[in-house]
Picture 1 (tube, helix red, strand yellow):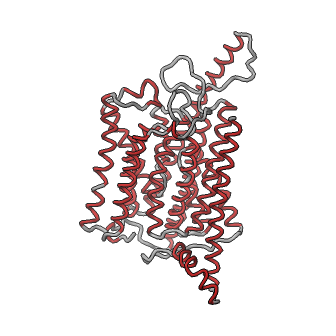
Picture 2 (cartoon, rainbow, N blue to C red):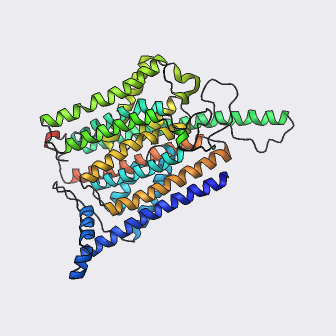
Picture 3 (cartoon, one colour):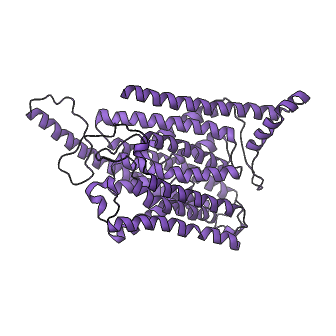
Length: 475
């Protein structure tokens, strides 16, 4: 029955991706016919509404920015971009970082999009990969405790502050010079990947000790120790590690905490309304600043509600085991601060906050599987909000977005399934941490290389490389 369920999930994922590819193909075919200028009256009569719809979907925004949207066709750029996007989504979804650090350079350098369009399509890919990963994780349980693999209380504490930080980071992205962003990116990502790598080594050593102890117990009982069952690291101060329950699948409804999900959706909807309203106001006008400041009470109120509940012991970050119910005020404030910091970095660099949240959750003592799942769950809200906003601003061509979103969605599902199997086979949850470190490091190299190249080009052309004026910026 379990194998039948897995095959059914795979078949469903493949069918959904075929539908996405089919939609992309139809849109591209219509777009090409529109460019070729069909002149027959019959064609104009039959396809008038459809062609108008496609023209609307492909039409860029009229803000005056020069967009570069390459024609969608089968060539080496699209094939290479698809392969890189697939690998980036697979690794990014497993590590809980999204993969934006790989998507943006791929879309810009290989496929040929301008930087703003590349960022917009990258958000679409992150959303697709995150949604696929969340759907996969909604059927899984915590590796050592009787709870969902997604820690809703941790997400409710961090996600509102993450959304607030993203808004601040977007403003900083406009103000800061490109070379400042590049230097910050390289320093932060190299440091974070190094920290995650050593965390992976530490976890690997602990897992080795547990496997050796399990082998010795089996030998003392006269049982063969060639195949030692996987036993994950205990999340609390337990002496005997419990049996892994990550592979035990349940229904989606059993793993959803509706109250916490409702609060998270409220934050998402409130921020979306405020962001859309802000885009229809003049930059630095009174209405612009009022809408910006209204984001603070929305995010602070929800995070404060969760923080107070944790402080009083009414709620608990259950994924930490026995240590998840005793929090000091300064600890909760620091968690919220790091949530804002993750959002600022994500908005500043145009990436998902998972590059900060993933390593942060690991440092908090969250098991790697739960850390990845919860970080991806939080990123789903921020990335989907960005996609809706970018779509309303006509920042990306829908056919390309559909295609690469389908690639990322399928890649994330495959990546999750393969890595979960490897964890069970090798008994190493630390694989997730090493994948996280590798993805962040590759993102540092790719984004850092692009940034350094742009810096050299600006220096060569004697362009201005100082701070920018936020009030003169047009979104």
